[in-house]
Length: 187
Image (tube, rainbow, N blue to C red; front, top):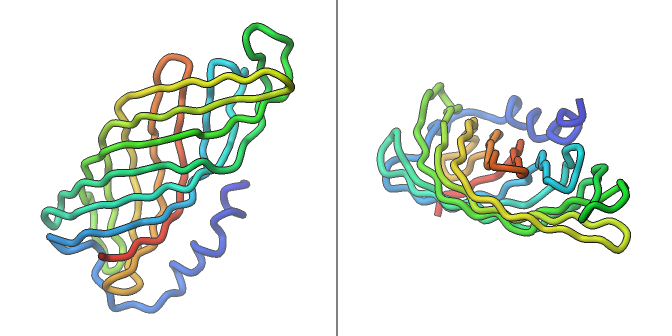
């Protein structure tokens, strides 16, 4: 399980952190999150999924105890390798990278326990990714509806860590999902 090695230390910190903070942002709170996302990206040029990484910056606002909104901007991260062919050429190892990701999402709290709150997201994402190998390159853009779920852990009234799964896009020859871990601060 490769994801466990990636998130082992932050998950252990969640379990061992001291208590005393509210589980969800209070109404009127605006927050900034920096998230590391391990992506699962399939492009038309590849015959298998690639697993590049990205940094995602999120800004959110909580309108009530249950509902909020957030915008995201995915920043180019590390490339992931996949087998594929560009423009009908020979199959080779391609490096797939996220060029951009931007989206707007509604969030709803679906559970709250002491310092942990669960949430669901629904919205719209615009993304572009590229694949390169040898002398060939390809780039594909996709837009579409997105859904996700996550957990926030409040270790302080102004700070949270979270674990989240997002299914950003499944359109045509492009599929993008992510498992991310983030750190949030109340602004």
